[in-house]
Image 1 (cartoon, each protein chain N blue to C red):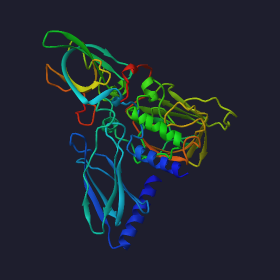
Image 2 (image 1 turned 180 degrees about the vertical axis):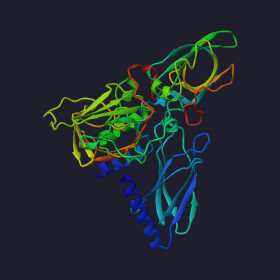
Image 3 (image 1 turned 120 degrees about the horizontal axis):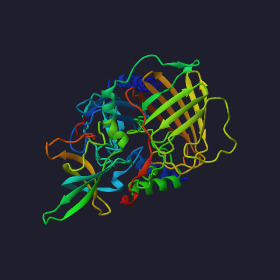
Length: 336
Length: 132
């Protein structure tokens, strides 16, 4: 669906470009802090007038080409998997019809400080090299698609920030000002919703039965239960780190509804309230991929619902491992 | 209402320049502007979540020995990248590069580890290093 939507945008953009007598081209090289090219960088151009989006991914030598771009002004952005590189944003890049414009982008070092063993991008490359992501028909279970598998949980490649209420914006600024030193994960608490630690370099395992989908994750707590047996939410669930999840099938898409969160967890770097209500539309477009479209609806923290699209990859040669968090030397975390 | 809108715009522009997800911020612990490179003998390895640590004894020119701790990624990730708990043996002499801690203690993050006996770089798990 996502690909279709992207294709549709490109088609619309192309049609507009043709109508205007040809579009422009934006091209260049993406490099890291050492000057080395960065492959697989998702580059996005967003038109400042109509909001139309054109996307490209850098090749092995770091090159990208965004075309055709109708004449106009664009915001260019790159968001790499956390946290080897800082995100890149450049606003108001003018493109004229028939013009080829060069924009080389250098990504600054991210908060991982290039620590050995902490770059999800490298880990993903190693896993894909060890065992190719399979293609093929989706296994079925009791008349439904079976989502079971071990997954490399990729982040949203083109994330949009949520519209934060003032208190949440202030909380975010404090977190950023402290170099994220109070992130729950740094104190051995679960991090990330709707599935904690379901981001590189950690992995998640789904185990499905007709009445239950279990998600095993490599973080404190370690599991999520999604009830498929038709039960409702409890009338007033006690707040917890993973909430209370129930799922219903909509054709081959599982619609998971979760409430009952505490307000201690972070959604990445963002705060939320106990009013958080999460909807996940999960489908398996082929055996090797799980697409999860998430809507975070929280009138206590966001002024409008916030969407993410996660594309998980099957990692057939991997297994989730036990995760007991015992020591992070939190006394060294001093912020800035 | 206008104030609120301004707050949204500010929040949006900050957020656009921040990682969407942060599992752990080494930048809260270590200072990228304080590079450090030391040679020493491995004394201990802590194969712990969420991050592994190892320690080396470093001798200065006056012959005084100090013990330094180096932080790595999670064991979970290191294993998938080809490490075992024996990849770095006690008694091995290594050269380690990283950034010093902000709190002034003898700790740093490990960006590069070289085995002095062979010159081999150990399991680079970062984007700029070699991967087994």
